[in-house]
Amino acid sequence: MRYSGFKVLKEALTGHKGWRPAWRDPEPKAHYDIVIVGGGGHGLATAYYLAKVFSQSSVAVIEKGWIGGGNVGRNTTIIRSNYLLDGNEPFYEFSMKLWEGLEQDFNFNAMVSQRGVLNLSHTDSQRDAFRRRGNAMRLNGVDAELLDTEGVRRIAPFLNFDSARFPIKGGLLQPRGGTVRHDAVAWGYARGADSRGVDIIQNCEVTGFRIENGQCRGVETTRGFIGAGKVGVAVAGSSGQVMAKAGLRLPIESHVLQAFVSEGLKPLLPGVITYGAGHFYVSQSDKGGLVFGGDIDGYNSYAQRGNLPVVEDVCEGGMSLMPMIGRARLLRMWGGIMDMSMDGSPIIDHTDIGGLYFNGGWCYGGFKATPASGWCFAHLLATDRPHDTATAYRFDRFRKGLMIDEKGVGAQPNLH
Amino acid sequence: MLIPHPLLGPRDSQEFTYLGDARLIDRPDGLAEGALDLFHDYLYLRDNPAGLHQELWFHEQGDRSWLVVTRDTRTHEIVGAELASDVARARGRSK
Image (cartoon, rainbow over all chains, first blue to last red):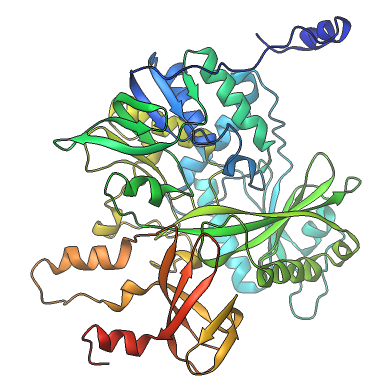
């Protein structure tokens, strides 16, 4: 079933009786060529590209809960490719290009909205760092504009420009950045994968891996053993827990990140704005709510909820940057669990166990990476070679000193 | 979160900074056989449990002591705290 304007009109006139579930609810088969553990954005994107680009006909996605119930439905929906380092920037730009063609590609309205991502600078040294990052982006063919105070004022006149402590000196703008409706990304990929023959098996928790002579033969689940030629794990947030079932320790800690939504307001923010002097970033959803957040709480957690000191810190940042936010009422706040890696960058690699592959360590930047992560993981699973844009995301980069540390803070996950 | 400081009583966790897994106390011997592997595992790999977790907190805004706090990562419940120096000595460290 393809979605189109004609289809909507036809259903409107016939009592909406022709809509069908967007994906099947199949029983697991005894064996698949490739089993993806984790039906989040990255797992579903992996399955979608395995079927569509790499012509794999025997693929299953195994999900403990339901599609769209994990981090893909808990993030703040921002997409951008404004990274500094060579290991990262081509990958995230690949992802941005996939976002730009995504809705036509999987015939689903994901509300990709490229309204711009603006990082504010408040000191001369911060402006210099932004100039360097902007130049690095442009060397990789990515759009970046360095703005002065007046340039920022034209975009966002309501900001607190003349704060005595943190005056706004300028900003780095990526016009192609923006936001995407996160649930629709999960649904679009699920529907696209399902229609190409991928079995999406929900309410099925992986309880162990069957490993014989150093080779992974399949997964034990709450719905029985499922054999597999290859197993790809994409469960960021729970990576440590799942990979421990295969006896592996990871360069990852799980941390909680909080996010907030205000009541619905009239159109107010032009795009995404991030504060350079405090932990605060904000955008406005199509429904009108201000979607904002800040830093991770900073201690290991699987609780999916944070504590009040960070709430206070985020709200202080908001008040400092755009005082008018104080008139908006908070509607909801929640927490999600992040794979915080040791250098702040992800891992897409095979493990030391044959036939077992890993995708994780996305820190708090996994959503924007969803399409490229899926494509690159599918490339690795199908061909056993890393994709050209993901060659740096290896496990052994820590052993070899090839860390991709955008912030330069070292092996301290809560500081990335 | 309130951390039950063994010397000062219950203190707000905001007074502390967080380092991570208390296994960071067990620094490997740099002259041992296979020290490279030992240091890789020590520095980069974590158990990352969902459940009770022993972790290092530094009382930066207080008496500047290091504590080993036992906390449940699923609920944030803190079940105990002791001086890291006591823990280190019990494990055979000289200080």
